[in-house]
Image 1 (cartoon, rainbow, N blue to C red):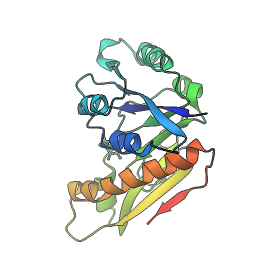
Image 2 (cartoon, rainbow, N blue to C red; image 1 turned 135 degrees about the vertical axis):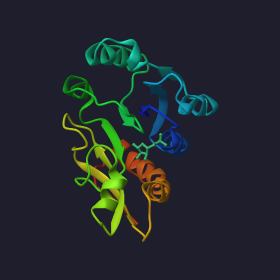
Image 3 (cartoon, protein in one colour; image 1 turned 90 degrees about the vertical axis):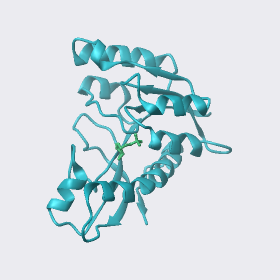
Length: 196
Ligand code: GRF
């Protein structure tokens, strides 16, 4: 039975595109909707050009997190997702929301977790003088950027790197790692993937 994958974005959606373009042929999953918390997110137009249904639930239209998440859940439910992929989704989700999807919700985070949970990950790796940086795909749990690791890609830090240099070097790895993890995860395989 084909798994239905909802992808949540907030911005350009390059990871969403990589995921959507990977779900072809014998892949056991297909994208069922792309939802953004920002109606102006560039990724919504990219999803439409890929023929994927889209929706936006503007978090600024709600008085609090609970009412936003109720609307988000209702929007998602219309598409009956089996798996949620957070892909550049920049809203912190409450434990109540996560509980609806725990065990079937993934996120990609631009650091080698458990290092550098939260924001500004590349700047923090540079400030720490780390020799490498990277990205992690993990299952989403109530604790931020903290769930079981399903994949990581390691990238060397080079002298003189800026956070933008690191982000640009790591992003192509994100676009390989996330689809590889989703492919396995769709088959119920949680064996972690390490790149390279
Ligand atoms: C990426 O660096 C990703 O790791 C983080 O959001 C950034 C933008 O992602 N979660 P995208 O281009 O919107 O997929």
